Image: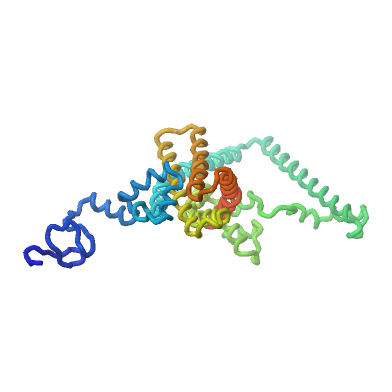
Length: 370
């Protein structure tokens, strides 16, 4: 190699002959002027592999269920986008579009709470004594009915166990009439309630949170979870911003998906235990969830421009099941009837048990840490 016909790579600084489009040592382009387009293309390509492989993978992903996963298992792993990379890219796009919908829901909830509080303030400013008296009478009647139900329930329970308690009917009635029972029966069956008027007065008087917690019923020896619940309940009571809880709930969904997807793959492993390793089912799950996020992204994008009728949304939801059914047949190679049964069990099991349990955990987490 002559010195006149050679140059050094700007990246690895190794010499190569002039005229090469790419460095033979590191692969970087030899003549690539840094423009805005090149900058963002490199960013997207490096982090999301948004290149020709994505375009080659998109059509099979959307219109050939199970094909990408099957070809990837067969060894064709450079022609198409890696399943994990595809899932990552599409999920980022989905949650970006989803954030606009979340923002509207959060604002709607906060506005609804604000209107409700405004109505309560209007009612509280009414000075008509007759209205106040009727409210007091209604509260007293409601308390009397509640107390009578509680007393009747306790009397029935005690009389049903007269042999065990050793008390006759007269002694039971005397017990129910004692002040101790009257004080305790208001807490019968309740676990998280407090007098809003007292709490409001304490807040107005500038009482500390610890004093308010005690008034709400929190004890010093209560567990950490219960203390946290009371803390968040008071926080919500003061600010009345339910949208913050909803926002925290939605913010945890992307993290939850990293657990839901492997669980879905594990369920497939149970139903197709002799159809390959767990990694094979994981590949199928990555591509299937990529399809779901792509379909939902399209729906969200269209809804931003034009409000789609509900029947189209339901039709789109049904199409995801049909897609799964066809993908299972193509990927695992079993008959249509057996696959139909497995597809139903997997889908309903995931929707009825896994997702509700996950939503409950996320809801509790969102309330505890919003």
